[in-house]
Image (cartoon, rainbow, N blue to C red; front, side):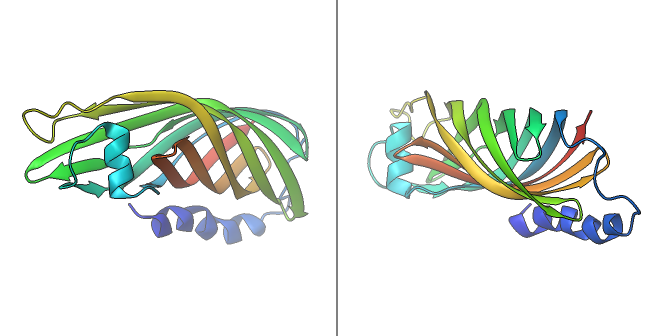
Length: 197
């Protein structure tokens, strides 16, 4: 499912929620959690992705997008600042040579700091930056003699988005960059729903 479909979900709901008599929660702080999904795309060249996975030669291509899924739990200290722990399944971009396909199955979890700017009517803009522990597992072979590499590390993640708050319900759309390696960067575009306690 592509980015336009995922971003349309909360935007389609927003006019309905704006007609409600009270748009914002009584308390704009405390524990919250959520889940979401969307679209991810590797922002590295085919040769860089191949080098990241340990592929030999140049005769391969990269199918560089897939669906992503995420879960998060956070704590909002005030209307302007929060911390958030997250887990993201980044899907399985593929290396392809002839009839051989290698899945680069990636996941990440970590912690981000969030700065927020309430703009009224229940909406707020936010930016985030943090660190992610990530793992990429290469499943398959490009040839009988080509064993590819699994990779892992701890690297930055950052992003920005907009969130709508209706009482305890949170609706969010956001962009994030998972900067795993100079040869493997993943951009994600997600829509999420959450609940603040």
